[in-house]
Image (cartoon, rainbow, N blue to C red; front, side, top):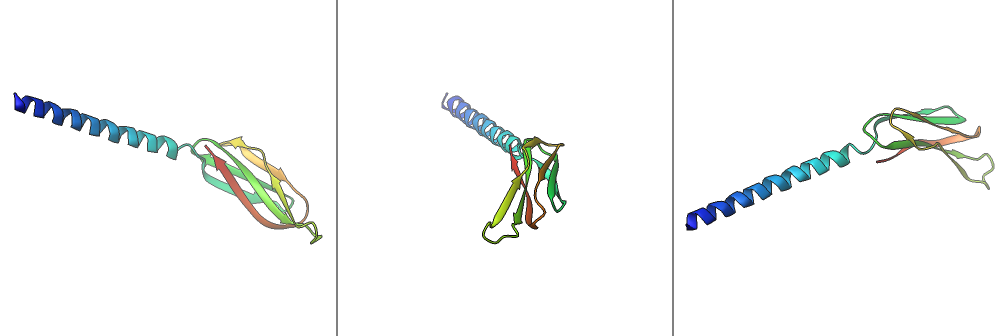
Length: 106
């Protein structure tokens, strides 16, 4: 009888381990695919665009420019949040472009 209980405990522990591992793997796969991937940007000088073709979630483009008047400093132009497969476009001024980046969220 002791062997039966021991075997039942081992089976329960093994089942729990398999379930916990499967849950962890599913959780990892879900969160990993929850953000956009394969993102590219376009620097058009007075506008910027981003497009993401993989994953899920949303993305937007952000262009930072240096204003010609040093007292003004930096200008940040942000595009709208759009789903994967769509283009986020940010119109901006005709200033010196400092950077063009993509923000993503799941």
